[in-house]
Length: 438
Picture 1: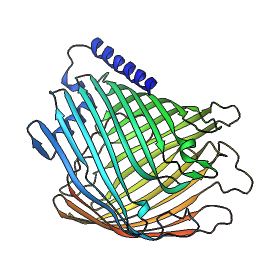
Picture 2: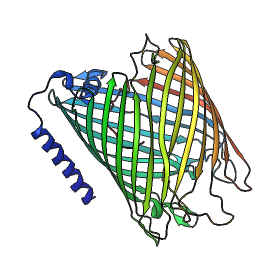
Picture 3: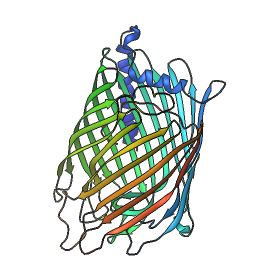
């Protein structure tokens, strides 16, 4: 953590140097695009209390019947009735015309009717300080999260994950269409002491992660922003056993962001494309010479297109490296892809269908003979969305999925049917430079 603080301070010093060497005046047309997004976030806040801007909502998510709360991880299915309730609150405080502080807190309670040991209180707290000048944008932030969640396709059990984060970035708008950003991120992960494959999840996955990105942006059109990103990351494991998993990674990404138009009436669909697509290559360098390095294509995409006046389509893709919970594997590649259609029945109702296919592969090490070391799953989802009032939205949905754990294990089916509800105003957030892929 001390090293992370030093690097964070170095980034802040670099930002200050850029600020001091930047021209004292700049025409309005080269104001940073991030500063424009910050202004939109402040102005779109739902409530005002003096200088404060506030967004708040109540959310009831995934309330219904689950045929297997462990997603086929255990030998027998475990059906239950589940729900999660959360109250996200965002407080925005403009300290001046160019300096803004925003804090978001999202407490959540996860409920299981029969599996009382799976019930949990979760919380995610984040804060950011924004400094938006004509050509320079600076952001410093941090946060803490304490959440029980499913870690990966390998481990479909709820494991508590605690994370402490520091972040910072400096963006320089070099011209009306080009900009450069330096981004830092540091995360300290800690997990429950759950034992899998003869070892502790905490002992294998507790780690410190630091990333530094240098990103260049070009925006020829108001609706399309292109970027190139070079990233370095280090992974330092706080191991309790003989395993040595420390590593570094080098990655290069090309990204296209599609900025949506204003929605037509109450129909929240883009006139053209919206979303983003990124693709790149990542190289994993294991510090232990006895463990194999890895190189692979990585990326993510979530793009929505309007197909007709009341129909939109979406494609999704995600592929990236994850560290494994198994002793015989350092890391693996997780890939998921999917597509869907949404039909807008009226200004207050829509129906959508989507499917997702995913699989894992283990390029980092050879699995033991006869062991199960791959996963495949396919999920279908059908949803009916309703706008009951201006700030009250409800959806009814059902999903059916199959999971293949490889080897002689049979396919496992899972069904979930239920509803979700949101009352209030969650807030739009803002688009800011972000390193790598999510």
